Image: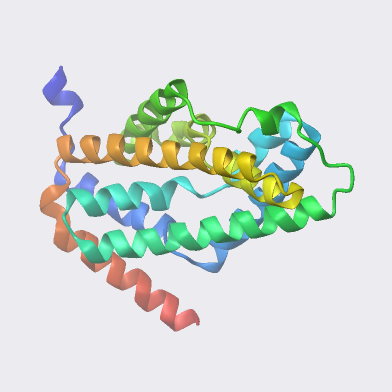
Length: 226
């Protein structure tokens, strides 16, 4: 049972690599979805409306570059790690900046329950992040589980704490800023560590050349559209 669970044909692994690298490429479509997600989540936080926050998390494409960092670690390629980390860094800066701007246009902003829930990291949050990282890595690796990815994106809660950081900056609450950003960092580390273990167990480590080729193709496509 265990061996079957961890066995993926080489062609399926190659398809998974292409899909993951493609979805984490810093294309215009990636940032368009991200901007829309930031606006939705920030408004949800300011309104204290969990339903709106969930909608934004479903739209956000933030999970892919984080998993790509894990893939880069598995194949031991600094270039791949740097490529994915750059996308993630740009996304993080964009989230903080746009959430800060959106908050300024919300005159009656105050510490809602949804904002307060992102004020500090916890052991329970770390466990959720690790479990979500395991689920996300499996879902990206096995095509029959791809339908579960939106739910995983909600469970791992990557976007709301960074958006909360921007809102905290608009309020000048530095304690909250540090606390909310620490929630994001805890979730990030949990997902990366868990996904790294899963990708290793699933046998992605020999696919270094395939990962590099996919990155090179994505970079050519980006340069062609620049």
